[in-house]
Amino acid sequence: MGGKIYHDTFANWGEQLLIYNLDGTATKLEKLKPNEILGEKPCIGVLDRSELLQWNPHLAIPERILEECLKGTVSKFESHDGFDYVSLLIPDRTSLLGSSISISIYFRTNLLIFICDETQDYSLLHSIISRIEQKEIKNLTLERVLYEFFDLLTAGDSLFLENLEQEITELEESLFTKGKKDYIKEIILMKKKLLVLKRYYEQLFDLSEAMEGNENELLTNGMIRYFHILTNRINRLSDSISNLRDYVSQVREAYQTEVDISQNRIMQLFTVITAIFLPLTLIVGWYGMNFPMPEYHWVYGYPAVIITCGAVSLLSIIYFKKHKWF
Image (cartoon, rainbow, N blue to C red):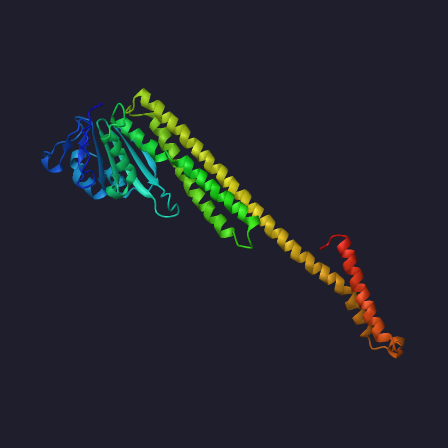
């Protein structure tokens, strides 16, 4: 299935959507016979969803799978008689909570088609084509191109997750080094991002594992080993996401603990103030009774009460300070 790729074969990729053979020739839609089905020799294509309808009479994609390709709303892998169908929802790294990139893949003997919304805007597929142009893919086959796609899909994810971990670490440090701030929104936002990644890697793991199963025998034994390595990599990425989710939970618990400690300090302060003024309230209540008391006729009665109140307050403060209530 291998073949030579000429350097300028894919030079105009995206300007006109064509199906390219691995021997370096291009197939144009207008030159195909009405009933001609592609697949006599290995060929690859990247089509947007509108162009897929025009090409489909020559691709022979079953009607139900065609509808799935046009929608591309869920991630899934389906192995049918003679072909595999893959649908991927890929989160945008620059905006994890935004809309995902939808790509569908139709793969059968001698035919590999990538279907996406806008071929010119999706750099990963262009990167695949560029590697083919530069002859960087050894032993060029359709199954190899498919593997290279999934390999590039996860190539920089370890560094991306390290950056996320650094963000979480900085958030944790800011809880104790910066001024008072409500970090709950930032923590919840980070948890949502990690949830998106968790679901993505779980689905990607299922897809890679299913491809490794090779029900239609579209992959050689050597390529199955490559997909096994890919499956293990995705599993490690999924484990990393689980660890980051645990880390965020720990940060949230630390933040909640800090909030609780701050509230306890405030309550402790109010308790100390209440305890100091409680004896004074008793004295005020005592002398507020409507009974004739000897102190009323004592010339030093009023100063004595003032001194007593001050002494009680001072002794209370000394006592609480000694016992480290504040």
